[in-house]
Length: 491
Image 1 (cartoon, rainbow, N blue to C red):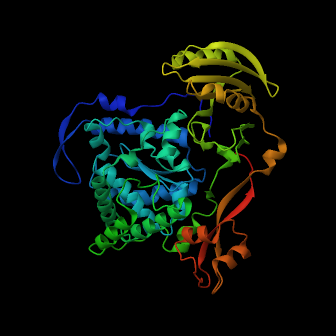
Image 2 (spheres, helix red, strand yellow):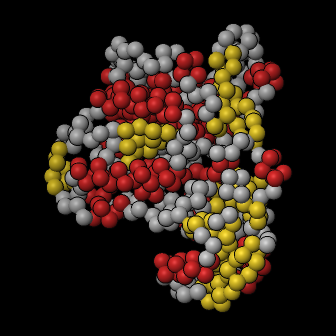
């Protein structure tokens, strides 16, 4: 969770609605089609969305890694069938394997995706696929068909990926999350197949093995199965054709393509994975972490205990939890700098168009707080608590349907009153994991290597991240990605 002081969500649909419709030639298909957004409007919308991606999701801190992804993208972009948009590439702070493209050519991969990639050619295939979406004007096609697109939609199924599955996405919406339905999840299957085709051709023209995307997809499928026990989940390429189908189709297509001669930036697997050294994997304490049902945020200095057994979510916009049967939910958001809690409550009520009832000043864990209630038109009852810590105002919302509120009131109140400053021992106990590259010994197994190097990944996780079978016996000097743990230093 990051605290943002401007809680408004940038809706791209507004910009799209202002665009007139015109007939244009699709750069990929060569066919004439109706488009509701001009190139200039698409670029302007994408620039605004990119600003929000940076502020809401965050970009990785490693300038060398980001520069590498940009350099690789710049080798691919000239081969895009579309020449009227400036392509940019970057890495977002997201632990799940994900990639997405914004209107106007802004393309992102997540740190979680980089952690399971094993060659520059694989990454080139991923970036090529996203270039394909932009080149084929898939964003504009969705708008033309009356599908409103918000910046949260462009960010894909972020929160759903955290919780897993359709029910999780619904839970997030009930928490007030702005994650939306997910642009990636909203592409049609034909659009995905088209982007696969375009992406492979771009990669081949740039000199990369067009079959490498199939290797990555296979790794992605293994990662998904390991994480969820299921073949698929809302993540990178959700609602795309099934992974086995895509692996088969991409490898069949690759046989008809040939890569031109080129000099890759990272010319070997070792050179590629070495560029990933130091990449943070898993949870990032800078976004706050859950220890059971207790949420700790070391940099912002607070802790809050959510109800035991509730489904939790930690996104850039909020941290929250939902009753397992959907009877109630609790969420916490930052509302801005200051100490005037009554003013903060009034500002929120005006913006949210709610009438606050039973307002009162209270104290929570020795901190000044303000409490009020509201009843929605649908009968839902909300309990709002504003509390100030170190010059920042936080808002804790407890929500339940009217008939459920009496049974949930005590639980919601207990959660709000658990807000407090983080202790020194709690802060010092936090750890983070970073990716490290080690050399295997001849004949070494994953178990033996993990024991020797202090690898925090399981053998199964290590096998997936390195694209090797679980029963592998390494050759001498094979570069292996492992996860090493260290004390969190704060950022």
